[in-house]
Length: 480
Image (tube, rainbow, N blue to C red; front, side, top):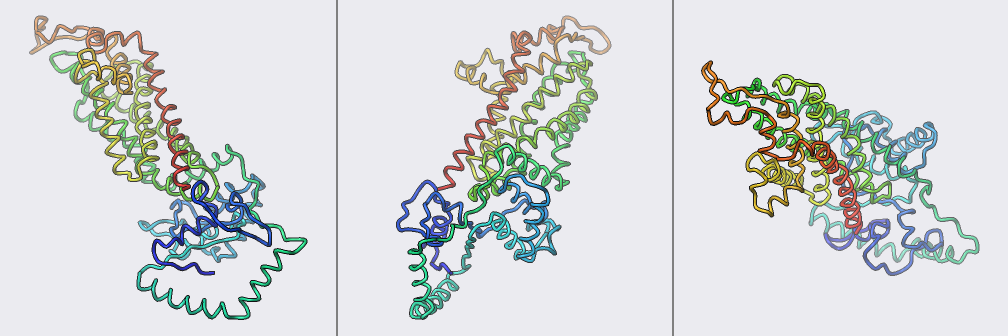
């Protein structure tokens, strides 16, 4: 059967209706029968599948892995042989065995051909045992018109043929049979929510681990930023006249400002493709979009922890910050939070904004604004207008900066020596201990140290929950 029409005439909408993708909107008229049995609207998706015009895959997975993960998402956990046999049967049917262990790839680094990608799309639908539907669009107005004329001729000839009348008679006869064949529904034994989450986590992680450049950049981008700071400062000192306070404040300001941005870069580079895959597969009923989001969050956590530890291990001891192991642990934990917050904030925005470049700009502006208002380094929070002072309590930078200031300055004693002679009367030498700077910059921060940690890390689950809500709304909107 061929569905033909000009652009905007409703071909895709018709296929969406048949395959159950118009779940919440639109009024459908008429009746649908399969094997003589009436099919309700909420059963469409359980009976039909829809191969989209665009092929969206994770480029670093092989054909076999792609189909196996689809089977694991569609069918309840069974033996490994069950999945292998099902995948092998579908690949055999669509002549994909010769590329089974090749990575799918993309337009940047090759992979299988476009025709083979199309067959993989069909195979991913056949894995679910549907009555398959395929959508194909013509590529130009001229071809559209010419094809339309030819199909009109074929349609007229077919309507007048004996074959057409015989088919219509058989359909009508089937409707009145006493014993009707069963409707061939898809397998109605999907895995549970946590099983699907585990499959998605394995798939996302394997796809990333194959991308060596992405793994390396995720692990060392903070370190690269830290090396610039090391070359610039070399080592902090305790002499007020040689920048003891200025260097430390500038270092902390740069660290709190840069780590959210590196987290944002990870999400902007890696998540849009996963979002596109989840948009397509969720409409097939394999899982919900928020489950892909949560799988990405879980896969990002160990990478972020490892990247932060590598970065802080080099910077903390090389720059000569407070020489205590416990302080190093607090320093690392305090910088892990803004890195994760930057990445998870980006995920939330990617659920609302389609263009990653716009999300990049929004996160950068939010980070800069939060740092100006919440850090207290540019202007003391107590001296700010009341609206900005209130707003500072909603920025994670406030709590992160207070933690880092207390962690570095508490217990420090400064000297004031210039040209080999002590200068106690110099106006810059009024601060002789770190606690003096703490009380001047963020009064009471020493007593809030634990509370600041709890509030800072509370931003992370809040953003994850907000992301789940946003992607649930996205699922509702995209399902039309």
